[in-house]
Image 1 (cartoon, rainbow, N blue to C red):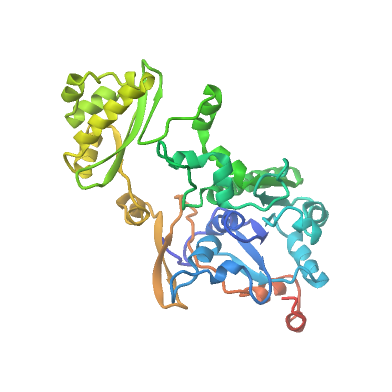
Image 2: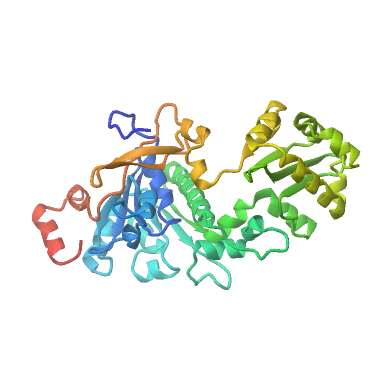
Length: 408
């Protein structure tokens, strides 16, 4: 990945975004748009700005949180408690396609930039609002966080081991999933607005994002009326045509996983060289493990022993040779150096002139053949004040006056 200015403009080069957002779910949708060429203006409070700017965990480095969520985004400082600050915001909104905010429910309306007010300024505006619980329901008024959504949405069960208490995970899956859904929802609404001239409000929540993330497993759980079996193996499908996803530890304690489509059980066990011993143990029918917890425990104990006889690289190679989906289970650090991650640019490097170093960062999940993404760095607080205000018609003297009155 490169930050060269010789690259083609991104696919969103004619999209203009104004965001009064902080944290993660409220910023990542627009960072993704900036990667793809959109002009994104982030509104921050004068003086301190987004508090995550100073949340660096590594001395001498920029804030990994702020950089990850705000790269390529322009920074404009505005005091939105002042009438002059709100006036400038409305001027920016008048020429924007998308506006985003993730304040506690009711805050935007209280401070003069709720949907009903801003759509008077720009009827074509796509207004994206992100909350914790959703706009309806008994807790709609409460603030929300990633951990709250993981807890309520059911995904903690995906991390759970049998007979162990459920816990939320360290990765911000609610925030990131909500951000990706907001990205898609905003662009869908923008397509409608450009076709009809009518904007709209798009509301999402961290809780709703987790429910969507659970996918078909959530549907199956509702249809069956029972929670899924957790642990090292998931056996699904029907007794006659079972499927399986399971993880095992090799002789060195390194974990791996394989996933079988229906009718691949025998093929996989033969490829591994396990089938004869499994058959001798009376466990050759995977469907038996669906109906009997005892059979499932016997089978997994036998597979645990067999996989512990060699390395995971050995087993993964054998399974892949038999056309069975298999992979090592990476830690985050291992994932950052995985050959497929690197080859596809999912991890990249960028130059940080202020810090005098190149650092590894997220690449892009999209590979566009004609309009590639452009990976940049986050702006300094208020870095684009003059540029943006000048584009609105403010003179140098007027900008100086705004600065002196702490409006910017």
